[in-house]
Image 1 (spheres, rainbow, N blue to C red):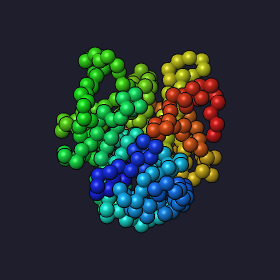
Image 2: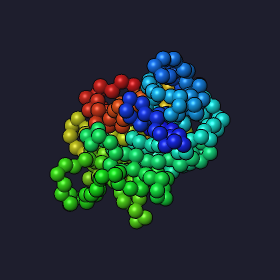
Image 3: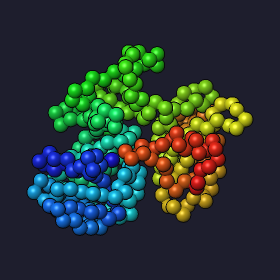
Image 4: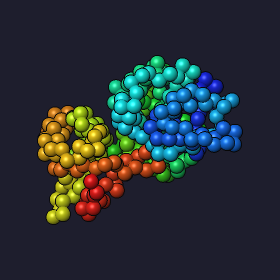
Amino acid sequence: MVVFKDNHEQLLEIDGVVEFFLMTASMNVNWGGSSTDIPGDKLIAVAAAVNRQFGTHLDCMDIKLGWAKLRALWETWSRRPIVCLTKSCFGSTGEASNVDVDEYLWLMGRACYRPIIEYCGGTEIGGGFITGSFLQAQSLAAFSTPAMGCSLFILGSDGYPIVLRRHGDVFERTSRGYYHAHGRADDTMSLGGIKVSSVGIERICNAADNSVLETAAIGVPPSGGGPEQLVIAVVFKDSENRMADLNQLRTSFNSAVQKKLNPLFRVSQVVPLSSLPRTAPNMVMRRVLRQQLTQGSVKV
């Protein structure tokens, strides 16, 4: 998710959650007690005007959009640069660290290359545990420091060091001291005895075909038992394209995954969906998809 931050370093918060995004839906703005509806095509003007003197509250509907949807919406809505000379940075939370560096450069390029400050946390701890900072050099699609008051411990495959409560997120600490998020620990599957992250497969599949908006990689056990089969749920950029040649798309996915990840991996099925199920913070609910695919109750 993306938020704007003005030069007064005041985050624009929506219902207490730092989630302010480009959108085409309508929005409701409260100006000192009086409300008014503002269409999505005026959003940039609103974003530029909102600051300590003007905006007191934003109540936006249905703006939890991922990077792929943002880019698709932006390219169809307008090709002009964002006029945000008063903005000092973007803020990013959710699964944004999982996108390619090119996506970060693309978004920054729409706003005169303002930096993107990463922030990641959870409901359980009431905020973030890892973040970016203006006080440090930043790296694209990475976190630079633990959040204030936090000490981080990254567990190895043997589970050490032991902590009281496991958060469940997989992180990598680079040799330069930055952190990369690799999704939830439970968003993994075993393909032919090889443990693999869903996120890694999804990155490859998202770039395998120009018609694909986003994907979700799910490991589904066959009804007769045996090792998990790789199923790719796909959302197309064109909603009318759901009856495309899925066999050809499966071949493209297979070729890309085997070339870039592991030659032993094979996509068993491609399932078209109108959208992916997500949590309120915009996390893909792969567990729900896995259950639906196992029960044969997925609605295309």
